[in-house]
Image (cartoon, rainbow, N blue to C red; front, side, top):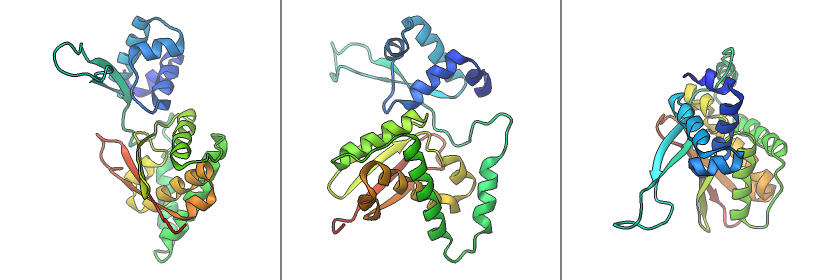
Amino acid sequence: MNRFDALGDPALRSTALLVRGAPKPLTADDVAERLDISRSVARWRLERLVDAGLVIAGFERRSGRSGPGAGRPAKTYAAAPETTAVEFPRRHSERLVNRLVDALPQRGRAKHLDQVGYSFGLELGRVARLRPATTIRASLDRLCRGLGRLGFQAAVESVTDVDATIVSATCPLRPVVVTDTDARALDAGMWRGLLAAAAGPKVAVAARCTTHDCLDTDAPCRIVVAFDQRG
């Protein structure tokens, strides 16, 4: 089964969106409960999505125990790293963005792209109905849940006093960055805009976002947010 066939099926599409919107991998039991379907149907759908390359399977012990007596690990399903946009018919929109990036003068290009990305991130935040939270951790969790509502997987991996790391298998601008690494500034600006929507513009101004592993087809993107303590 290819990706278009899978997404053309309403049942598979709803299951794919559920997995993509989840910050952590889901089991067949999780999907069955949230979609109000039987476990066997949930597993069948998930395996079809694995065959289509939209979902990747893994195993983890949900009990937190290990060794003899810990029980069998549960089979889990997570969004597959997405380095190309799913379009039908193919519109090559990422190539249009790349041409617009190349049309900018080299001098000052990164600054202009950061500003455009920031505006785009604010717009995504508005569509996701993000509102600033009272703490950085709560803001980042809210940001990831908001992206999940839009169909993009993201999760907070760590938070300290000086930085935080978000992982995203389906970062909205990843396909653009894959085809033109100059678009990294656009991507970083988008994450700052999302941060502004979820934590407030003062936090975003005092933060620097950098993206990593975007070109690795087998891994999620890593977004590191460094906070300026003076801000």
